[in-house]
Length: 498
Image (cartoon, rainbow, N blue to C red; front, side, top):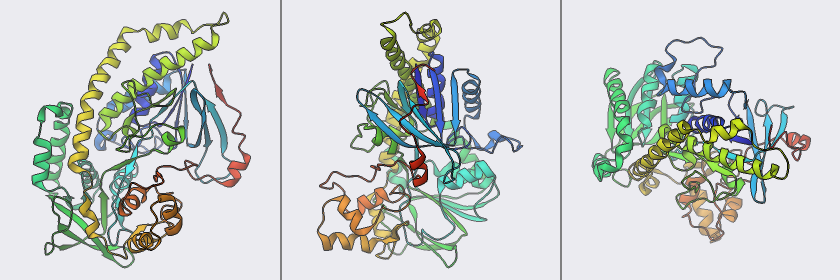
């Protein structure tokens, strides 16, 4: 029984461990060159470093997961794997097509996997709301800033402003400070009154976050030690400079995130790190045909099973609630996927003398594993409420549009401005997203709307008549035409039992 897991972050590693313990054969795919995902992004193993855990939470959990998965004889780990297509099959998990090797390099290896079950653990990426000057060199996503701090031990500037919304801003500021940057301040867009009202309501629903109190205390201590100011109800509304950012304008904002006139201040900075939440990486889930909820996350049941037979989803695909939630969901998904794969194998061999191995049967009935999954279910269920509260309190509010100008770039790839985007909609009276994208070119560049997609939808009003969203991309990731021509993608390299 074979399981393919896409993504080697917290959810994917937990899924792999759980599935292996249940007796499955696992193929773990990730586009990076080392395991850990964005949460445990770290320096290459070839680089000697001290205090690796200094920039990481739950580092011991990562090392335990990595060690067990790497050492297991039934696990194949394929790094540098760019999954570009999921080919749907009737009543079964889809075929997985991937190119293995350096991105955008020629001569990559082509592999096709035919799993009995598939686990999607592709995570999320920063969402950054546009503002005048956000295309200047020196303006980064907070995720990029932290990734470079963790993997390269490099600060992106000497005078840095961190801005946006959500608890993620705190570890980003701490990572920058630990790598030598002078963090001028953390600016949270949500006002204090909204924070208190949002987090103080029904506190019993936040039991899952009790363990995060220690993390919060650590961030507070770090901010005090590095003298990092923390301001609520403030946002970066403009970046200024010629060849790179030199000054940023920071203003107070109201509960809708609209700037309050007369409160603007200008701060000299050579780097700005911004994050206004996260956008789940839905490309593969959409390609597989998975149902997507109204809140734009993958629809799953209590076993992390999607609406497609044999396909499971875990982590930030199903809702952003932190690494603890991702690990719990991954453990559940890996175990449930192993049961599906076992059933598939048993059905395929029922007419012969062959049967699932004794090891597989023993593993799936192991009481210790069963208790672990039960604990994961309880943990997952508690974190669901925490994730919903996180989005309600810190999610983008509509007033951010007020810091835009007509000449503000919205789509960086195609250089489409706010004025062009809204003007063309008025001129064409179009109510379909597909026709608006063709008319404006917004979302049709190299990133295919990954950065600007949600913003384009909001600026155009949303709820389009054609039912199209910017999450739907026929080719999941950019691929060279030569690679496509050379792909014999109908010949599975992994099929059924390995």
